Image (cartoon, rainbow, N blue to C red; front, side, top):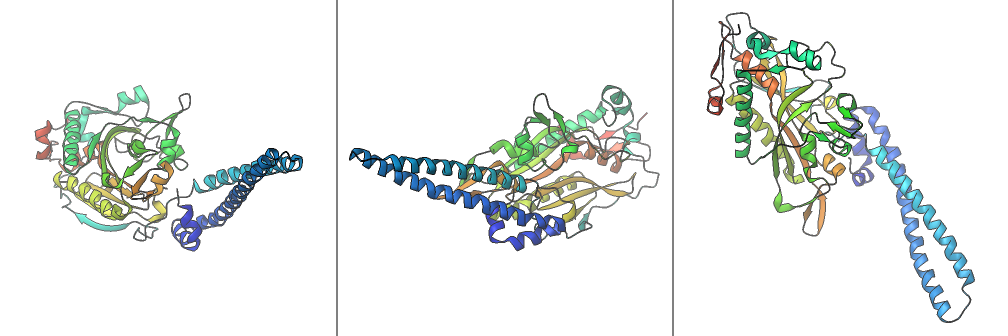
Length: 419
């Protein structure tokens, strides 16, 4: 949620920032300011009349104690009460309309977010493998360990059974990443994956990405597409103390996405599926530290990719492609030999105070409170990381060499060629 005080004080700057995303968004600010004016006017008048009510009530009490006739004063009091009630209702409606107008507006993009329409390449890291043979894709390399056909009978398209060595590889990858994140101060969390509407609204996924979310209307619950949703709500409606920050969490959860609008896109294999596992980083920080925290999260993502030996590039996402809550986002894209191109593997975003305002999470500083900042980043999207490990570790005979760092956590060091 945007800060209404900032909109009041800097309307032109807010309009200019929103126009970077979409010029049409700036037009909403004038309507918001008018609703805000109506709310403040009704609230101010109601408060003045309440003061008058109190004074009149005291006059009536004095008149009664003195045995004087208070009939006229009582009639005035009745009119005052009716007017206060009317103004209170006007203020309530104006406030409700103001919140409804603010709700769909996206966050203001950071000045350093890529101007668009294309993403900006920040850097490329690692050597792209020069294979002396035709690259196989992850399904060819995994063979029976990824069973899409039987999963389709069970659940429909875009689901998979993982079996055998790939299960051990996934478990090792998750454990290795969680240990690494713990070393960076992120507390491991296994959160609920069924959440109420408020959690999705609070993180900016509603209203924005309804078409991608699985909804259970009978229970008024939703399946999360990322544990960011549950981690952000961990401190819903709380006031944190300044000395508690930063608070960092690493959430492990299954994630569910309908992938609406993705028909015919990445239909082969497990790159784009309806259910996948992910470890997500989430930070609550003071506003002054959010820039440094964003770079820290990106650095951890790059550290993970580097130790896994995966060639990748970092891109600064264009403002026109940012989600509603993000002020700035980096993606790490990994090289896939079978496609001969980089594909998105992880992302990390700063949402500034946007989510904190929607969830009413604040930090206390001496005698005042303020909205804190939240950030999120993918530590490991398991399915896509498995794809990258299989394809970049492949050998001519079809076997796959896997990173040694995962061996201590139960992963095989080599996968035999698929039969």
